[in-house]
Image (tube, rainbow, N blue to C red; front, side):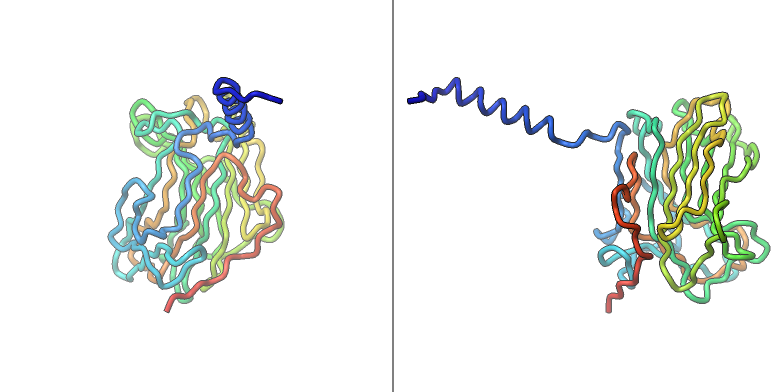
Length: 278
């Protein structure tokens, strides 16, 4: 006969708790990751502010749940809409850095009849900033754009000076595999980006870009940063056009930003489909 005592019961419980803790997935090393946003609260509450003069949460269509975000652009007006999310060692967070890079996925759509600004070189969709933790200034940016003249997706790499002025456009890290993927007007596209900063002084950074599950850009020799020890620490949902000839509706949905590949060990996803809400 085994006698069960309070001591032995407590010990057993502690053993079970210890076993449970060892089987739990490790917490993300970078502060405030993973981040997800499908706007299901009907607001921008998941984000950390930003201008939204013509950017709204809508239930007219979505790829995940009921809601998505739209920006309705009007000819004759410039547009400066954005929402941001800060993470990692951003000055407003002060947490652990995302030192192994970040993965970004989201759904993007330009409605049928959308017209990019005449003469514009690029049209922004999403941005990842590498910002200085001392003064909060952006130092480098990786930007997912569309090239208006041909509708191709394009990944840009920009440098900003310490005083906040524009530095230069660095060698592009865009599509270099197969036929370039272009916007499918009136349909959702799933965009996916992986960036990993280089070792300072070495060109060993990584940028990879997928469109609808197909790898379209791969660069493993990128000098993502030069002599400034900054890390990815801000995500921006962007709709910024200074020209006044753009018009139509641009949409975003189903955001995820993490330190691990959300599609690891998964079957390649199909392009997102439309969920209409009457």
